[in-house]
Image (tube, rainbow, N blue to C red):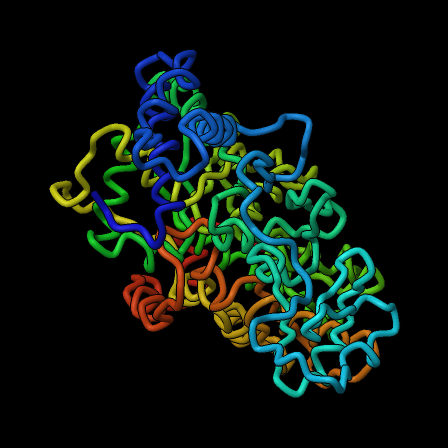
Length: 478
């Protein structure tokens, strides 16, 4: 059994694996009955108040593994029944309160939310408190602290609040589907919908690629994922799962770099369009800047379009670290090019549902892109690729990029641009820390070694973008 960062992630994997296994065995109708009994712990070790609630929650996880609420377009959903253990966010008085008689906290509160008991210990009325923090700033003992739910802390775009029954609630108008809340929720009460069953159906109905060919488009961040085996062994596993061909999304990145370089030189300023969460953030929070977003498709969509132009009956399944890609694939401008999105988490469950041992497989070949296309996976790689594309096309334009590592840095850059204070001419926006290698759909989380991405990039057979594009006979739009 492979290692997981948390038991929540392991539980999610186990549900995905068993759903895929049931689909493989044509017993999908038994999922809601079999999986909760298989996954839930016994009565002596249940994580909830009772085994019945535990199994009810697992049943909801099964629903998410099978596509979630079809009436909700957001790919991130809250499992309400699992979201009842976190205290509501807000300011609280801790045990360090000494019951002093100065009562500075009460004097500082403009809403009358603070009172005292017979021992002069402060208490905050949550119905009156507006979380302004003025009381905490004047407490001489730092006894008043802000307690924020992990999901709310993780969501840097402030799309998460809570309902009257204290369940987490997602503001669909703000959510960028980045999935940061999914990993940070200690109870696994927020999850991304899985479209793994859609992928399995596409493979099955291809009839061994006789009815149509199924292409796997694999994100370059794969270099930081299956570290216990070789990337080539994962490629062989994808062929075993039924894919006709496996192509690097980095080739789409090469295509985008060439086009984006041209557009940047023509317009003089751009923000990148590769990260769907970043693009969504601009549209929802900085609508006046949306025309500055590059009009190019993302590498995923660009390569999907190329594949379908070459093979009109093809089906394209993107595999990567990003939950926001699931939302991007639903966009009107993208859905005709990409049929399904699967995360690396889901790919591992898919592989294991077929009892494939990656370590004993032969190494397949994955070499469709340049070094510059591959380094799109880490923060700063996109800017380097655009600079290289300008050079290779002999375009007389100097790119002065601002590399934004995470949505908070993106926010600062966009605020500066909105106020005409930005000296740079290109904003590379990545919603996740570190870039795509920090995506919510990764197998493991935490700091990633960007050096691994660069190493993978240098292993590319094609050293220039032009050479990589020449291999696929791609003709740039002019």
